Image (cartoon, rainbow, N blue to C red):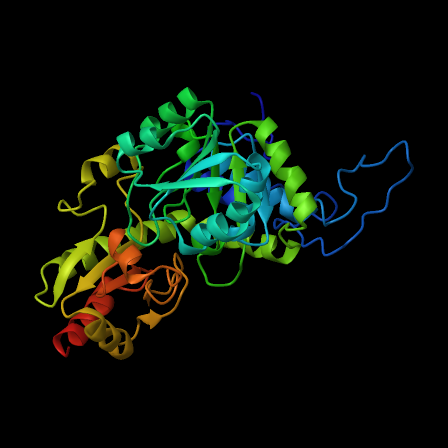
Length: 399
């Protein structure tokens, strides 16, 4: 009888829950520590010029062993050839744009994308001679009509923050390929538990690891995962130029917190479904948006593209009565809810995009993408749904 080596895996084809815990990670060879150590060192001593980088690292500004392990884990989870971690989600977005856009180039960007992404397009790259078209990625005809001879990137957001618009990724890929452009997708609000855009043929996926990878309101970080190693090499080169790599301490925390993503997302999705259903029937609520609701305009697309029967922890509500009622609701909402700008964590949060994530937009622009005066973004945590719904019910009844 052959005795199995207890240090080896029987299969390379693991389920996602196992990958979340183990992908990229091996016990530390000198001590056997099961957790990847924090290599809090700027420099790594080299033996000689001939053997420079023989051990893989030289300077943490370019690459760090702790960060490299997290990058290997995320590359596995995102079905990528390679991934690189950043100091923030916006650092990841800026570096991706800088890697593929030059003066005179054109990018098609979601009209409802994250407010700071729009600011970067207008105020940074726009000032450097890059052209942008902001279109509704729900409408493939609009995406096709926006293509120009100088189009280099199609930049989608799945789903959009905070309006939760979805994109038919396969259809957009076809448009990008026909135009000879790359399709980049910011999938921060979904997480790989819900969808892996690279599996649909997207070229590059971006996440703010601050959100579902962290899931505990502890860190700020970002990641770019690439289908091709060639694109990854460009991302690495520009990360090095920008000096925006993730710190080893943040990488260590993210390595630990990401292990429970599957557990968190299941509870968050379950809570979001129950809360959205409750809010949809409340007389003080004008509208509710959640991909798991039958009333959601893109429910069929969500069912087709989302994994595990999950639709995430994000939803929104629109209160009757406009801005005045919205302010009163946010001020009086009972715990366990908190009013704050983050999302994806175990604590349930509400936010006001009109004065937070999308404050750079005019009232007309906000209304144009579906953020009306009564709009409230909701990030569901892992508390008991009964407690969350009770707090909402009491608050709404008092409005």
